[in-house]
Image 1 (cartoon, rainbow, N blue to C red):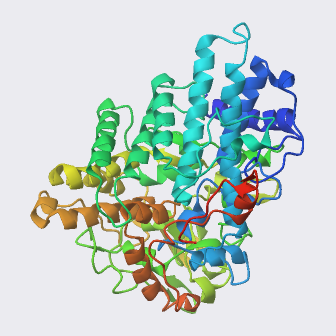
Image 2 (cartoon, one colour; image 1 turned 135 degrees about the vertical axis):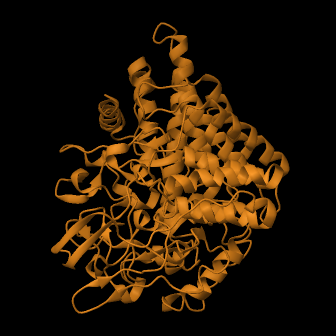
Image 3 (cartoon, rainbow, N blue to C red; image 1 turned 120 degrees about the vertical axis):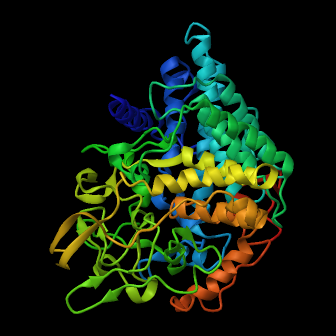
Length: 593
């Protein structure tokens, strides 16, 4: 029943957009409106519900004319993955050159991907403000007061979400609320970006949490606890300055909320790590908020189109080989006595060997999460296909490792002949994040012992002997192999930290261990670049990465990450050009650009 409701919710969003908003364009910061419906045509309960659903539609990154789905994909593999030490652009040198500029920290104000990310987020903001104004102006007889409050709360959650994503991308984006917004006046949303918007983002999540219910009948809608989780996340993003110094006040505020979520005992870790990346186990006990996707023969726009390019190059997907894992990330999964090699993980490579008749896997100890996170030659891919070098478009350009978490299991992929599209949800807020953020807080302002215990919960789940582990295979190639039941595909060895390790080794060790665990747990999910940004360690980590990775990827030779600049993207020049009001632009470019 839960999945049916999810499916209906997503399909409803799609058809509401088609029937209510065809011909209407609300990208007020970047685009002249091409046509609008009159206020009277949507000034009723159904119209307001349709406007709200159209705001939900913007969560998946679609809904913009002339924009490819991956430009504004909520999974942020383009902006949060490729410019990090986790991932490479992949495919070949000539494909999607705008992504190559992002990978090499050549952030330009005219980059189309950056422009379309701005357009998509602020179109989402516009729709949330439209929903709020429309419901406020409804006659009481049209809709109950309780439903009005719920609509406003959902809209404020979404408005906070879109602004949050903007604040991760840009150092000083504008904040636009319903008092600025007038559907019939393009000038109304031309507001200056002259203030920090974190307080307004927090206020949206706080207001949403005060009204939203603890549970929802439709899983695509946020709950009170989803709003609180995003409020805590907003505070975590303010937990360190750009020099990496902790903000004790914000960390304490985040810690209080995170403790509330843990003590609630409503959520728990899924039994196995892999369950967070399967269509069959969407919206499980670990899920706090997921971007919902669906597939049907009539509605490919409800599927996860934004990661369509980031699939293996071979059949059954056939496209397109983007978003490959870096050697640096692969090496981070090495273990010694079951523990991460925090300081020297990159001294020796995890390698593979190609012989005339087979592929041989690396035989030294590894964290099992490696083979749920990325595809390696010689290892079974999603338990049905042997990963070989034809999974990769150009091995000499971007190496032999593909991305894997977002790819649906074999029985759940495909629509309209394109196996890249599926109903595999994006778990943008899950309980594992709550535990590791709380561990970060404990390191800085609490107990190292508790931080260790929280990290060990994550590690124990990954080591669960009853869970799914990548299976061993035997045979020569992908068309001639069999699964060896009960036998692991590699030498997996993962253990919790021995009691007292964090206390004995001190705060610096504990901080590094928690951050390293976050990398292993959330690798290739679009968070890494922004995690380095919020910790204030981007330049140190990424320049070290470039030095080592360029040994294999020659196009990275001579590339460097510029401190105080590359942590954020430039405001698109198109947005500035279209922000003019009374002869002056209302938007100001980041001084770093």
